[in-house]
Amino acid sequence: MSAATREALTERIGGFARQTAFSAHSAAFPDDTPRLAEVAKRRVSGTDHPAAAEPGLVDEVAAEIERRRPDWAGTALDDTVDDDLAYGELLAASVGRHSA
Image 1 (spheres, helix red, strand yellow):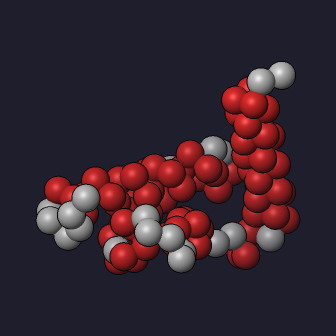
Image 2 (cartoon, rainbow, N blue to C red):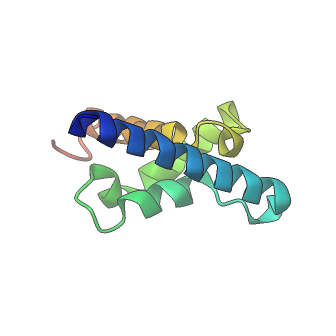
């Protein structure tokens, strides 16, 4: 197995494990499911990701994604958080709130 294959497989298994654990927790404790913005901000906390400097924008984007995908916590967790961060980064760059 090549290093690239091993890395890709590790990432897929990790994503599956995170999704499974998050979905099970959310199903068992629906009142304890975090908001998408909280999850996204935790992911970039302490990094140089542009979203770390734009928490309000992350909140706005997350609220819209949650409105459009109310089941976000049960499906494609990593992809949804990535969408939130990517959309926020694009919006920040387009309105001049952050320069790349």
